[in-house]
Amino acid sequence: MPWHHAYFGNLSLTRLLLQRGMATIYAFAFLTVLLQGKPLIGTTGLLPIPEFVKGIKFRQSPSLFHWRYSDRMLDAVSVTGLLVALCAMLGLTDAGPLWLSIFSWLLLYALYLSVVNVGQAFFGFGWESMLLEAGFFTAFLGPRPVAPSVIPILILRWMLFRTELGAGLIKLRHDACWRDLTCLYYHYETQPLPNPLSWYFHRLPKATHRGGVLFSHFVQVVCPFGLFAPQPYASIAAGLCIAQQLWLIVSGNYAWLNWLTVVLGIAGFSDEILYRVLPFIAPYATQPAPLPFTILLWSLAAATAALSVQPLLNLFSRQQRMNFSYNRYHLVNSYGAFGSVTRERYEIVLEGTSDQLLTPATIWREYAFKGKPGDLHRMPPQVAPYHLRLDWMIWFLPFTVQVTAHGIHVPSYQLWFARLLKKLLVNDPALLKLLRANPFRGEPPAILRAQFYRYRYTDAATRRTTGAWWTRELLGEYVGPVNLETLNAI
Image 1 (cartoon, rainbow, N blue to C red):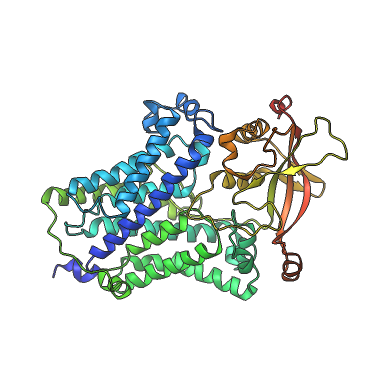
Image 2: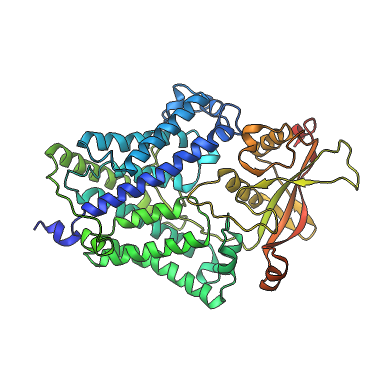
C-alpha cells in the first residue's frame, strides 16, 4: 500500500462527494446571476457592467464582458453555467475522459470569474472568492475512472484550514465580545438575514451562548491543524468543522458560505470513514492517472505553495485582512468572517406615498423585501443557500450612519441606493422582481422616503400574545421625502 493511502486513506468517495457538492453550490451561484443579474449589474442596472468596464482594464479584472456586453450575453453566461453545474451534479462531467472533466470545471470557474470581476459591490462578498478558489481546484480532482490524487484534496484542506483559522483569529483580534464570550448575546438578532429559528436561538440561555463561542474558538483555532493529521484524526477535525457550520446553517441565512465550508470539510474524510456513513454507495474501480496529469498536479502544488505565502503571513499579522484576494483570479485568498459583531440592529425601511403634497394625513406604504426584516409580524424566511444580494447590501448601509441621542447623521449615500430610489419612483419592472411586494402596483409613488429604525426581537410573552417577531423604534430619516425632481440633490 502506498504511504499516502496509509496516511490519508482512499479518496474515491471523498472526490465524488466534493464534486457533487461543488456543483450544487455553483448551480445556486449561477441561478442568482440569472434571476438577479440584470436589475443589479445589467445595462440599466443599479451598477451597470458597461459603465464599469469602461474604467478598468482587462488585466486588472479579467472577464468575458470586456470583449462584449449585453444583457442577453449575461443570461447566456448564467444559463450555460447553470446547465454545466447541473451536468456535474448528475455526474455527467466526470463520467467521461480526463480532459472533459477538467474543461467542464474550468469553464464553470471562468464563467463565474467573468461575473464576479465586473459585479462590483453586488458580487463583492467573501464567498464569491471562496467559490472561485474551491471551484478552480476541484477541476483537478479528476474524473471517476481515474484514481484520485491526494494533491488537490490537500489543497482543498489547506483552503479549509485558512478559512477556519482566519475566521478564528480575526474574531480573537477584533472584538472584545469574542474574548469575553458574549458575542452570541447579540449575533442571532443582528445577523444580516435571520431565519425562522434565529429568534429561538437568541432566546437560549446565556450560558449556552458562552459555550457556543468557546466551541467556535476550539473549532476555528485548534481543529484546523488536525486536518493534516493521519486518519481518523483528520476526519474528526473535519467533522467538528462541519458540525459548527451546520449550527450556523440552522440558525441563519448566509447564502452558500456555510454550505461551501461544509463541502470543503468533506476533503478531510477518507473513503473508509465515509462508507460507514453512506454504506449504500457502492465502491468503484479506478485506473492510475496518466503521467502528464500527475506532472500537472505537482506543478499545481508548487504554484499553490508560492501563492500561499501572503495568505500565510496574513494569519500572523496584527492587521489581519478579512476576505481579501491577492490576485485578479481569486486564487489562494485570505478568509475570515464576523471579526466584529454589531450590538444593535438597524434597518432602513423604504416607504412611498401617492400624495403629491405631504400633509399630516399622508399615508405611507412600505416596500417589502424578500429576506430582510420589515413587517414586524412576518416570520423571518429561510432563503440560504440562495443569495438575496440586494437585501444584503441594504443591511450594510446602516454601518456608515452615526447614531446619537439627538438622532442620526448620514454622511453620504451609495450611488446604487440613489438609483434604487429612482427605479422605485418609476415602478421599474426588473427591479421590482427583487422585492417581495410592491405597494404601488398601478401608478408608481409620487414621493419616497427611507426611515431608519432600531429593530429588536420581541420577548416570549409578546411573541405569544401578538404573534410579532420584531419590535422597532424610529430613530430618524435615512432619506427625507424625495421625488424624481429632487432625488438628484441627495
